[in-house]
Image (cartoon, rainbow, N blue to C red):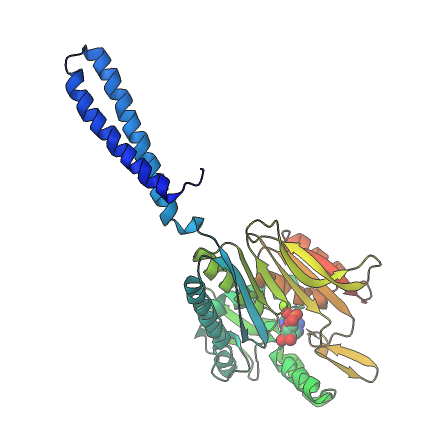
Length: 371
Ligand code: AMP
Ligand code: MG
């Protein structure tokens, strides 16, 4: 529809009033005419009135409708879960944008209180504190969803992804802080406590029981992706479709910015000679997560140990890798990227093919043995 100037709207309104007056005048004149001609003339006049009424209605909705208002870009950030979360979306004014960014980040704070194993009062810590007491605790929807998905993934990856990695990740976090290899006696105690088969789920009541005393859960490999999905869904349901949410290495985008074909994201990419370089990704309506070689590692006796742990050995991964997983859900991209770092390229591709055909692996760096 052509965009009309407001003055034209009032002119049209007066034209419509004129048409109405003309009909009244014509009614009197036409009273003496033959019934058939009279009927046709009345019919055409009615159509004309409806036409003008519709034009006026369209015009008034044009001026009132926020969807047609000029959209502006808004960007907000909030530190949480040990990283920086960012949301970018297009809205018609700053009051609306500000209201919804606050809602989104309040929800993010709530999620941190569910998933953070650094927080003594978080839900995941309370669950760990009940370990070994043979007590099923009812879980919030958020923890239930993440726990249920993690257990599926643990089965599908033969334990490469394991939410019960907590006792080992506690030792490795200390090792990174102190730049010292973990004590072997501590590793010996922690290793058997890390086993997803010791997490029991009650599907009916959405409850869980950790069977061994000393167990701890670590959602570091999945919770950021889950938070990205939660924020994305919240903002999308609130009417923002040109939307991007980032939480560290996890990202989800919706419809591209107005008049753009894609979101352009700065990222590590593969260069022409297959080396990792700084580049750009062009994305829409998808999620992507990157896992692997980061700043968090320990160099000890000529070996490099990653913050991603192989549950079979209890050690940080020693192969170099940088894996990206792309697919519809950020939760799954995040968890799969962590799991695949442990599995290696070939096993990862088999898991994706069998269980997650809508997800795809992009290998940026891999020094494994092809296992
Ligand atoms: P990401 O950066 O998403 O790859 O996640 C790495 C984080 O996941 C680590 O810092 C640990 O908190 C956690 N993690 C480490 N190893 C595993 C594992 N084998 N399974 C599940 N989570 C893990
Ligand atoms: Mg991950």
